[in-house]
Amino acid sequence: MSDRIVRVNMRTLEIKEEPVPEKWKLFGGRAMTSAIVAEEVPPTCTALGPANKLVFAPGLLGGSAAPISGRLSVGAKSPLTGTIKESNAGGQAGQILARLGIRALVIEDQPADPDKRYTLEVRKDSVRLVESPELKGLGNYDTVTRLVERYGEKKVGFITIGTAGEMGLTAASVACTDRELRPTRHAGRGGLGAVMGSKGLKAVFLDDSETQMRQPGDKEAFREASKKFAKALKEHPVTGEGLPTYGTNVLQNIINEAGGLPTRNFREGRFEGASKISGEAQHDVILERGGKIAHGCHSGCVIQCSRIYMDKDGNYKTKGPEYETIWSFGTDCCIDDLDAIAEMDRLSDDIGLDTIEMGATLAVAMEAGLAKFGDANAAIELMKEVGRGTPLGRILGCGAKVTGQCFGVAHVPVVKGQAMPAYEPRAIQGIGVTYATSTMGADHTAGYAIATNILKVGGYVDPLKPEGQVELSRNLQIATAAIDSTGLCLFVAFAVMDKPEAFEAVYEMINAFYGTSLGPDDVTELGKTVLTIERKWNQAAGFTNADDRLPDWMYREPLPPHNTVFSVPDEELDQVFNFVE
Image 1 (cartoon, rainbow, N blue to C red):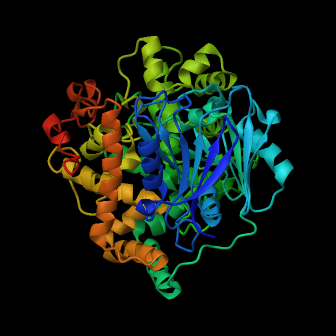
Image 2 (image 1 turned 45 degrees about the vertical axis):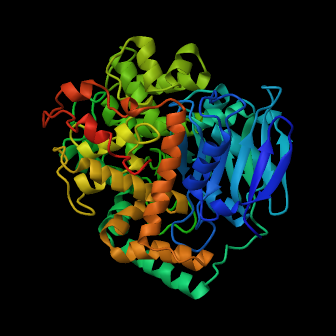
C-alpha cells in the first residue's frame, strides 16, 4: 500500500485521495502538517472559519518496528495564538494511520449546517463520513464508549473531541485513545480541538486490522539500526531509569530544587508542597492502589513513562498525570493533593482541554479572586463550569490570556497568547528563549533547554545567565522540528544528545526504510526547513520580532529564590532564526 494524502471536505462530504508529492517524499509528522498548512491555509484567515484546514500526520517511521515511533502530529492555524500550529500526541492513532498508508489526513471546509456532527471511518480500503447526532454534546469518555459499542473492542483507535471542542473554546484539545481505548493522549496545545469542532468532526475511527506493520526497504539494516537505537534508550539514565520508574513527574523535585518551578501564578520559583505531589510520592500512591507505574501510551514504546492512576478505592481514574499537568493544577495553583489533581486531569481529558493552558488559567483566575490559591474544591468546580459551558466556563475555556483580560489581571504568563508550561524563564533562561521565539507560542517541547540547563544532558549552560542560551535554544528547536517529523517521541532526545550512536541510529533507520542516504547534516537541514516554513507563514500572518518576547514583568520582577529576572537581550532573541532568509 503506497503512502497517500486523504482529503475530506466537510461541506460537500467528498473524500479524495492523492499521491504524496515528490517534494514531500521525506516529510512526515510536523514537517507534513506545517507544509500543508503553509501552502494551503491563508495566513490571515479566521482560525475557526472554513479556510482553515486540520491536518493529521504520522511520522516518517510511524507504523514500523522502529522503537517509540508512533507519535501523531496535528496541525492547523491556531485559534489560540493565530500562528501556525503543530500539536503532538501519543496513543495509537499515529501507528494506525501510518499502517493504513495515510501520510496525511486533511480535513477541509466546514458543514453548511453547524449543528451536524460526523464520524470519519478510516479502514484499509475505504474512508467515509457517517452522520453521528448521538455523539453531540458528549465528553470524550462517553464518546469513546459509544464508538466502542458501535465498532467493537478490537485493536482500533479513535480521535475525538469533547464538549470544549464543540463549543469552539480555544484551550480545546484533540484526544487520541491509548492501547486500552481510553481518550487519555491529547494534542493539547493551541486549541486544535476547536478547529476540529468547527469542522463538525466529532470523531475519527481508525481500523488497521487488515494491514501489516510497514516494512523497510532494507530489512537487515533497519533491524540493526532499530536495535542500536533501543539499546541507547535503555542505557541512558533518563530514558532507561528515571522516566520508566517515576514518569515525567520525576522532574517535580528536580525543578523545585533548581528554583525554577512556577508557583502561585509564576510569583515564586519553589513550592513548599512539591514533595507531596512529586514523582516519588506519585509512584508510591500508584503502587499502593494497584495502578501501573510503567505503561506505554502506544505500541512500540520502550521508555514506558506513562502511568495508570487509581482512586482511593482502587478504581481507574486517569493516566499519569504527567509532570506538566501536576505542575499546572498543583504547583501553580498551590494545590498539593494528588487526588484533586487527578480529578482535574480526568475532567480535562473528558471535556477535551489542554491541561497546561487550563492550570495556568486557574492560577490567573485565583489571582483575580475567583478562588483562593490552594483551594482544590474551588478549582475543580471552575473546571466543571467549563464543561457545562456557562459564561464563566467559556471564558476560562479560552485560556489564560482571555481570562486575564476579562478579569483585569496583568500578571498573565503567556507568549503569543499561549500559556507557559512548568519551567520558569527567570530561573531557567534557555527555556525562556524557546518560549519567546518558538513559532507556536510558549512551548517547552519546541526546544527543551531544561535538558542542558538543568539535567546537564548534551553539556551544560548555566540556567541563571544569558550567555549561550540563544545558541542552545536555536539548536534544540532545529533538532526538535526534525524529531517531530519522524514520529519518534521527543524523549529520545535525551539519548540522542548524549550518545552519538543514538543520533546515528535515527538517520540510519530512515535510510534503511526509504532507501535514502541521509547524514547528520541532512537531519539538521530538515529541522531548519520546517522552522523556515513555519516562520515565514507566521510573518505573512503579521507576526514580527516584537512578538518574540516574554511578558514585560518577567524582565523587571525578580523571581525568588534566586531573585533573577529574564536577561537575554532582545537583539540576541532576534538571532534565534538567523538561518531564515
